[in-house]
Image 1 (cartoon, rainbow, N blue to C red):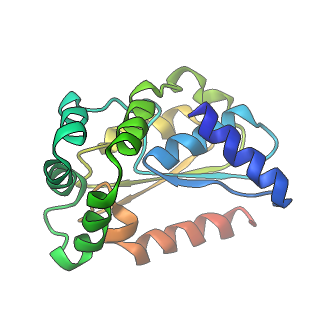
Image 2: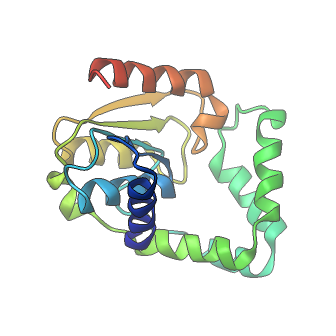
Image 3: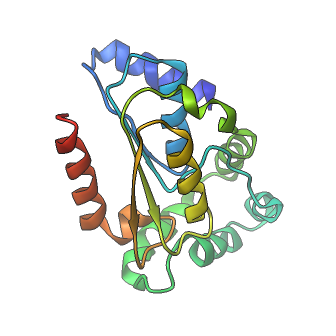
Length: 187
């Protein structure tokens, strides 16, 4: 995650992004945390969606990625989406999952598995919004609760009838929560 965060920070500097606000889903939420921790003062706020301060990965996920991408996509479908999410909403994401190169997907999951900033969350000194979802089985709501308890001044929005991929499942609710957060902090 440190390397991903460094690459993002370098890109933002190269394009001259003024006071950006990192927002990330899952692994992107880990990158957001890493950015806020490794580059204090660079960001005015952060948004963490369906993520945690430590992201352990089921060992079976690595096996599926290496040997059976269709099985991997089925597991993502089963664990990543709410049972109430309609098939047409899920279908494009799952089709994209099947096109992922196994070595890239495996590498990303290994990076997630090594990620752990639990002891450092108190160092974050900007407003942070944490978005969680009721039916998230990959990063359960207790992960969001931990983030809110350990990031000073953070706030949380919890969305019903959605899973790990809450921005896909409930885009209007997520966008409204982000807009409220940004407005509340004058961003």
